[in-house]
Image (cartoon, rainbow, N blue to C red; front, side, top):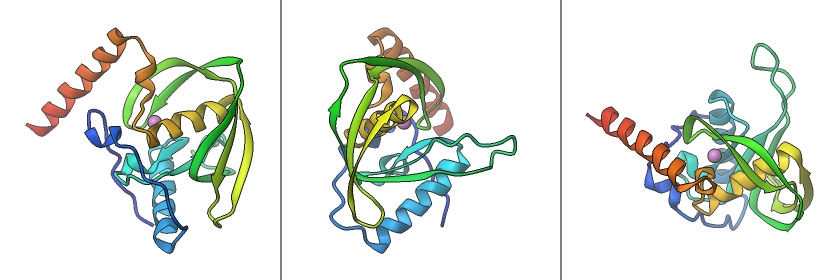
Length: 175
Ligand code: NI
């Protein structure tokens, strides 16, 4: 396993549409291992492969609450080629953040419940119903696979402000 660098706004790769995985090969398993290590290290609850500059439709997630030492029981989940096949009319609001937009949080409204179809790490196609944080997280991560970020749901004023802030920070880091 190795720790990978997480790409940050305004990196244009975040706007790429990721490609489907044709087969769960050893390379894909390696990518998933690296994604978990990177996600736990960050720390974060969800990561899309494009966030480590791999434009493939792969997501890792762990919604278990870590204990005071940042450890405890883990509930790793992997979603390959995930798609939302149904969503509730009812909406819910969560304060979202993103490892590619560090230390920025805003409320986003999304369907409260979704049904997701995906391939698991063993190559088996499965379906699950998601609600609560799970529903929000899977929608946020699938958006990444389509080049969509949670700031796209904010007002233009807020989005312009955060883009400006991160563009400035990137420029400073590059100087
Ligand atoms: Ni994100």
